[in-house]
Image (cartoon, rainbow, N blue to C red; front, side, top):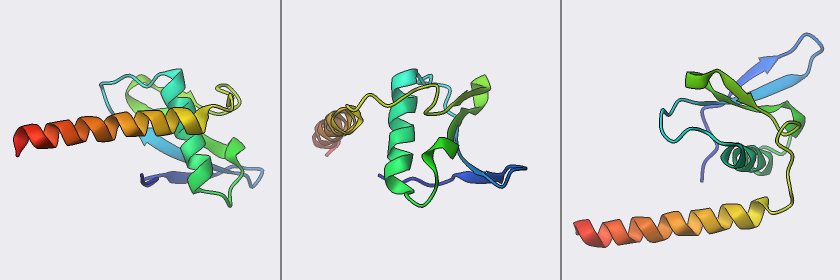
Length: 98
């Protein structure tokens, strides 16, 4: 898993916002996915204040931040479960197309 294609904005007070732009029409970015995305950003980028992280759903002009989508403590398990499901699906498709 990579965290890339972020852009940074320096605010007037000197704080930074690290923004991940989400451009996909489908699926619509829902609260749980945004919360997991913010959690992953926090795990990958440790030298910034996670309160400055944003995910911007560009097509719907919606912004997500941890203060509005607080962590519940289950993010790691939820992420690992979803990642494992994706790997199983990838393996199934790979066998189907080999």
